[in-house]
Image (cartoon, rainbow, N blue to C red):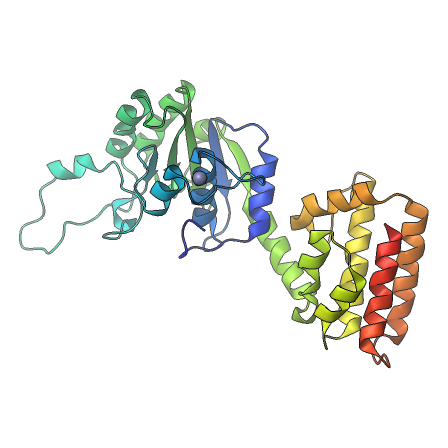
Length: 318
Ligand SMILES: [Zn+2]
């Protein structure tokens, strides 16, 4: 994890990273405040800059580049944000040279810090954009919150976006689109995380905590009825069955080219599951049997055996 202070749902990683089979020259991530957009973006930047990314595309966490990112010192990464947002000693250094020319207001402890991203900050990027990267590869600029660029700054950015420099990527992050000129928007590949945030909270309520243990097992695809039954322990089988039924329904949706409904954030795992599905007929037969066992799931005589039989059906459905 690059930034421990900011957490974000791992499924977004898969969604954003796998959704981008080709890296755009400008990416815009939009979503409500406080859902972890910045953390996600920094992870994304780290993965693009990483010298040996992992199989899922994320940064390795151990190369020189990842090390620089984790210590906020990457020479090929810039985070442009309002001065007021920059806390002393945290975050990657900004292009803040213009600040040096500003004179602190006499008698005040600190000069009044800007709430906006200013044109000087965008202009300062031209040096960064035009000099070769330290690693001979990519350079990444994060602009966050992009909706707080003032008009002049947005215009200056537009000029840069209109003539994209080679190997220079912009990631814009915003709580809302208002405040970002349409001309800038039209230059960005947009990913809306708000929809996912909504879906995610829905799922979190749906998948009662009692059955949450089952999700990683299903995602892993390593079906082992005995081990899974052990993992289940004393958790109520009814919850697990409900979740399993939703999972299997989603997998059949994905197999027929539809989007998953209950687990939109697990698209990749569901697709793998759909590929393993050899006979839809058997799949639905097992699904029906699992659903039928819901009737006796409230008080099974032997929960462990009950779980084993459910998971065995799931295994046979493959
Ligand atoms: Zn790395």
